[in-house]
Image (cartoon, rainbow, N blue to C red; front, side, top):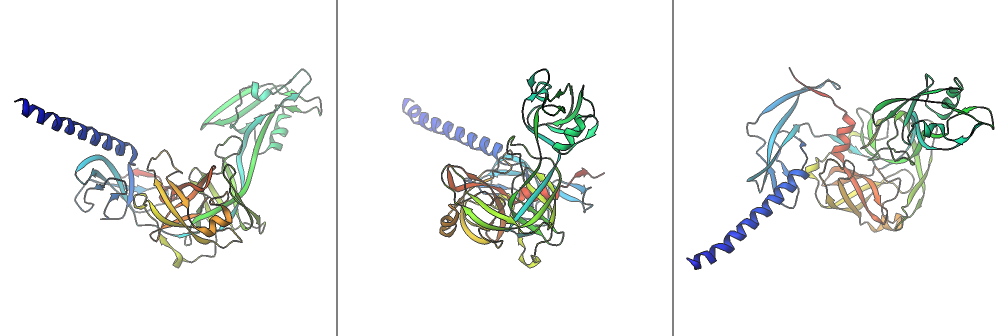
Length: 416
């Protein structure tokens, strides 16, 4: 009996260890794998991870619910619930797949200028007013915070600093402000201070009402004239928060010089606007990029399929970007890591520039290259979003699918 016990102990111990490891693997992928995926009808469904993870046969009869698009007035969209299995055997989680016709998009790579006016005035900081009674910031003491978006002052709608100054003079004894903070409308009241310098009512705050810069076009739909670019939102440089868009323009740009990236000092593309006449309109500024309508000299024949996120793999790829003039060129990169965590909406991949020509010219990724499309296996896989400050060769990228989802902006209701 003792011999049998001695034999069984290592076996049982090893079995328990294997079960614990298996449990950890399942728990890890349960948390990391998204709950929703795009697919085409009857398409094989695999997740590109270290371990083999597959969905059940897409052609098997499974529960189907019909959804209809309100915003776009399109035919019902088919969603399906599928079980993902480790090694095709051990269930991990149920996910929702949406059957769509695979989008065909024209990869960009050309630079474009961004001109934006904010919806309201964004508070970026505070300054003291040298008043009759004392030196202080009435706005700060009155409860206004950096990052607040000022909508109304004394009943008047405001969108720029001059509007606020004018509205403050309506009442020099009490200021009524309507602002937006974290999606909530807040009203504050406090007394302004009369400046000894010019006799005007002031509240001691700095605001931003516009922004301008350069980005790169990720994709273009010539039939609809729609484009997406940048791969991340336009944020206020002081608060780091997304700027609320009132209206925006896309303009033609030519890249003139390049500041090469160095460890601790990101490089930059420097360019100039070619004309004051816009080539398009920016209609939304989102966490996943800027989107709008424009007319670029591109043909439907240049369209390529969009890769679904589960099809993007670690390995060789390329980017289209412009480092001189306004004509993009293709450069080699490697996708080093893929992150399916849905909380990281713009940091889905870690990429590394390997192309000697691009490294020689820019040192890797530089500011202004955000939005440069990533091509892998003949499909649009994503776009560059950020550079690593201490390693210009490497940076983050977003899935093209995430940008596409945002650009469509569809709203669904359960069909009756």
